[in-house]
Image 1: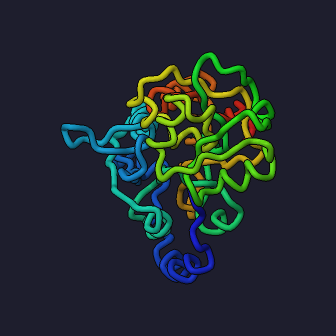
Image 2: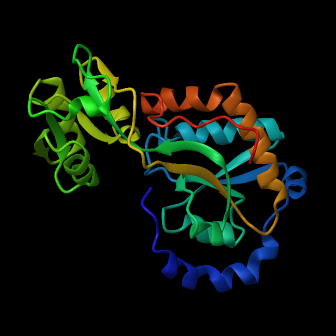
Length: 268
């Protein structure tokens, strides 16, 4: 998700990281304890959220529980926010963190990153029966795109699909209803932000086949002080991605395939 102010974050956690790096637990220590502490953000639905029984569910929860089962330990979920997830890692309060942690060179100065578990990229969502196959098909003055005013997809559309008309609305439900009602032909956005809402609107939704060139790679974050956990996680994630578990769980919770699929590779 949106990158933190890394310079501020460096100042906030650098001394803490140095002082507490020894608290980072190795893979052997986690196995001996019989528990792995996993940070998730329940405000980042449907990656993580509370259900009607007040229990944590979602894509991140499925991934964490599967990894815990493979490791043979209990998963203890720790609630984090976007601003607290990296400090929680560097201070040893958690062993790993999910929650749409985008891999960047600046963040890699603070934490270690596993293989990606999901991607974020602009894609297009329309309804069955429309003649569009790819994003380029939307570059026509006969096409209207429903978008949330003031958001980043608008600038991308103006640069890459300049012929398309824009219908600017205030929120995702209004945008999707406009497409479902025929007032617009499609919406361009990160499809991960649309799936849960689309399920509540009666329409036969279909994403277009391609996506924007820019892709954010969201990974599991781990403490840099010991590499054994990251090494094991990469082996485990390669297995889960090769078997389709990650992709199936993503579609279950987000409603669509990832706009930019994760290439399955044994090289970390």
